[in-house]
Image (cartoon, rainbow, N blue to C red):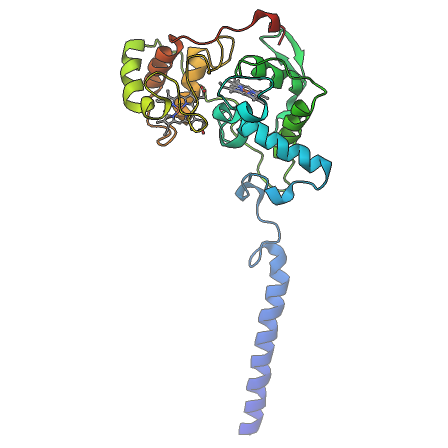
Length: 271
Ligand code: HEC
Ligand code: HEC
């Protein structure tokens, strides 16, 4: 009798185990134990890894483009004598949200451009920053520099299946405020001069100049108090991002705006 009970117990236990295993196998489709596809909203955009750069000449373009983007005065010395790199404004190699990032741009061009009054290509837009923000000469569209930069932007923008699209295009939106450049000078001395220098000269290549002969010219997007304020509010001071109020960002930008800088060469007006 006792033996029978033992057999029944073993059988029941075995059944129970099998049941649990079967249940687990079955339910894993219902994402209870191992979600087969993590929910889309939980997968944030991630920067592409260097290991994913394609092999061959296409990859060489991307690698050269990255160098050009991050150390523009060095790798594009033919075209600019400034000490400003693309990544000084398009921070973190062009992926920092609300520092006018490059991610996703290829799909958005050609696009209507207010300044040009026409539809422009991504190459046109890069050129615009070359002759204004870099205070440089136009880059040859067929040349390796333009192709490398575009290849780098395309690589940053490769679609990422099941991941959230990149958020943070352009700059943050600030209200329209009336700036006080005198107060701005005070803020500059306290919060900015440590890196950008008391005369805005910067410390190349780490800290870009903010005015003077090696800075962007007066045709640049950054040479606009509201735009610079939007950049500064979100991205500066670089080691304590976000500490300034919108008013303080306007004040310090108005102070910087009032300092001397190179004059835009009108011969490049159509860019
Ligand atoms: C002094 C700062 C500065 C530098 C240096 C600079 N840019 Fe820009 N760039 C800007 C600003 C400001 C905008 C416009 C942002 C806005 O209005 O939303 C912009 C816009 C762009 C855009 C269009 C972005 C969009 O969302 O439509 C591209 C592409 C671009 N820049 C590429 C470059 C490249 C490539 C370089 C280097 C060769 C460069 N920029 C250097 C400040 C700069
Ligand atoms: C800790 C050092 C540091 C401090 C402090 C700092 N910056 Fe910057 N700044 C940088 C660096 C580095 C960059 C290049 C972009 C990046 O890497 O984030 C930059 C970029 C900039 C740019 C765009 C590049 C250009 O050439 O115009 C502006 C404008 C700017 N800073 C303004 C300011 C203002 C205004 C303050 C003070 C409120 C400030 N920064 C404080 C380090 C600093």
